[in-house]
Image (cartoon, rainbow, N blue to C red; front, side):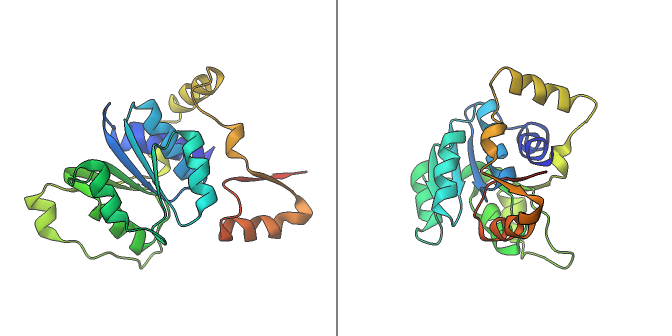
Length: 201
């Protein structure tokens, strides 16, 4: 429910990504994978997955990412400049909720680009905002809660897309846990050991 609605909705409802656009996704968990799926549905032609865990980057390719970056091992700004011809991406999506990754999402967008904040940050978290880039470069920050969804219509649309094979749902589940293993599930979530864990009775 949350991951698909939030991720796909962030692309289609909040950002309204245009065909042929370049997109970067910072954080490849359950929601981040669905941002990638949303970008595919929106016909973005460049979809860059950014994460510190290589196995998640490999999974991102299966969901439609055209490029991957591990910022713990690579210079993400240099790679994005190479991919975009030095201008930055049209849209970035921050899907973790930390000041560092939010700042990254803002840095990598082009003049006139939009950084969409999807991750839920701490109540006291802030980022320094370079105001000349906001006005002089017309960079935008968009807030996104639950994919800006209209539940009266969006859930039916997503179910129809799933039935037609245009979005993956079962493939999001990387591990199943029994109720006795619930603490292990939370440990794996924290360490990045799964993309989307499901508790089974």
